[in-house]
Structure formats: C-alpha cells, structure tokens
Image 1 (cartoon, one colour):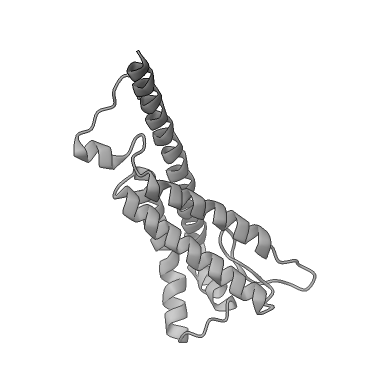
Image 2 (cartoon, helix red, strand yellow):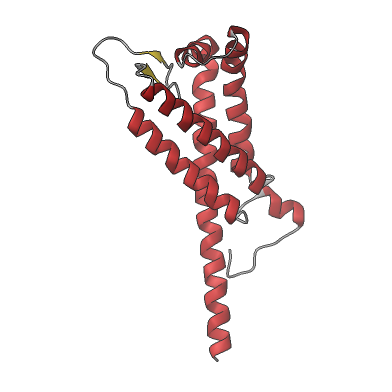
Length: 174
C-alpha cells in the first residue's frame, strides 16, 4: 500500500515536471521567436540596435550580427517550442540570454542611453527617454531560469523529441 502511494506520488511529480517544462519551453522559445519576428520587417533597425551597444567589433561583423540575429532567434525559438533537441536548444537559448544580459549590463555600466532592441527597434534613446536596463535584465534572467529548468528537466509534454523516440503518453500523463 505504501509502495503504491509512493509510486503514484512519483508519477504525479513526473507529470507536473513535464507540464512545467512545457511552459518553460514555450516561454523561452516564444520570447526568442517573437523577438526575431518583430525585427524581421526592418533588419536595418536591428543593425542600428546592435551598433548602439558600441561593441569593440569590426563594423562589418556588427552588420552581420544585426542581420542574422533575428533569423537565429526565430529558428532557435521555433525549435525550442517544438521540443526538438530540447536540452541542447534550451542550453543554447540560455547562453543567448546570458549574452543579452551581459550586453545590457555592459551598456548600463558604460553609461550608454539605449533601448536594448529586444522587442523594439532599439538604438539610442532620445533626450528625456529613460533606459529600462533593470527591467530588461530581470526579464532575461526569467528567460534564463526557464532555460535552466528545461536543461535540467528536458522531458516535456508535446515535444518532438518524444515523438521521434516513439514515446506515447500514459493515461495519467494525457
């Protein structure tokens, strides 16, 4: 009797973890997908946003980053949402968040007055406009937490990984 109760508790925990992993996957992947899709209509603004960070990189590389970042975000976000190579894509998504956090923190520390360009055109702010560095960093830390969760618990509901592996949900998981 105690063994059955313990087994049911473990099964319930596993089901809850899979649902939380799905939510974390959707939040992380959705944030990347949306950020990329918002930049695609005007890639020149994406380049402007990257330039605003005043990174010590060649201008040609800044331009390439500005043009490719939205495409990378869209592809990575879609793959995370789909649950394909879940642990690896979530780890890559987490690394991207660390880079974004470092970039925003660097701009803040160096006294730049820019919009991060995450979900907007980005670039230099006009006089009187306020930066949102703390909010942007905290948002990206939240996405990083989602990435870490999915790396630790990659098995989630509705993942292509499970479909490829031939896994079918039990009635308790459905």
